[in-house]
Image (tube, rainbow, N blue to C red):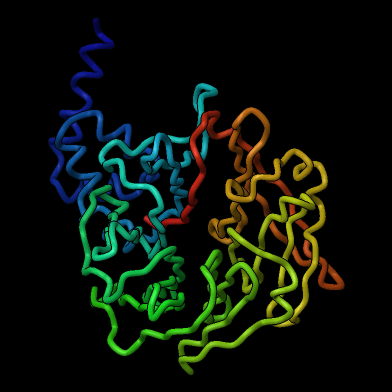
Length: 348
């Protein structure tokens, strides 16, 4: 009885503090503790989901990188947080219940503490959603100025560059649109049209947009507003790639190798030191993805029996320019018929 009485009094001791003091205390705690705090009482829940606490975290330099994982199950898209530590051996993925199930084929891009989602609902309507990762609330943002299929997106200096295809004059055209996350408007005069195939990959490297369709790789320079082909990068059919320190990485599921492309040196190489990890992967490239996770590489990959795993890899460039990877941890995330869609590094 004494323990119960003591524990019941603890929240009241904290809540008796001034609001500013409570916010300051919670702002110094890990973002991963907030789900537990929100269960204590409604007051705590309102604090840990308020814009005020995330503003305070930024001022105190307490922001953290969090991995958000998008899965599709039974034709609906759900978003999860990847926890850093397991407590009871269960999966590290935690569903965000406040976010509604969304349609399939959404495309996502992370910008600071927000996630932006794009999808084509019909021939006449585009879905555009903004997810605040502090409060886990969803808001619409202005519709795109044109209707596109297969949007892929990258972000440079707060601007989201979306690339997709539309059918015009009996042929497919590739279109680029730009959304300014600061002003929340689509920038006029930034639509660039090229007669190419469907887009299936996009990264940002050295402040340029790199995209590829089924046959070619293209580079877009926002400063000069022009496209060029990159023949060297086109030597491999990279997909679901990321960029760490201006080097592109992707998992070659056929060869079971992690490949790296250095844009400054214009050369490809295979990342060494991962020989024990990569043979376990299956040849399901649509389920694999690399993500820049706070300067490390997070590799999501499938194994047998519908298992999805995540490995966090520390990258190191050694003498001679060879890139080596060290697996810091490797975790089983989920076993189900769900389809892995996207992983995003969000700063909150």
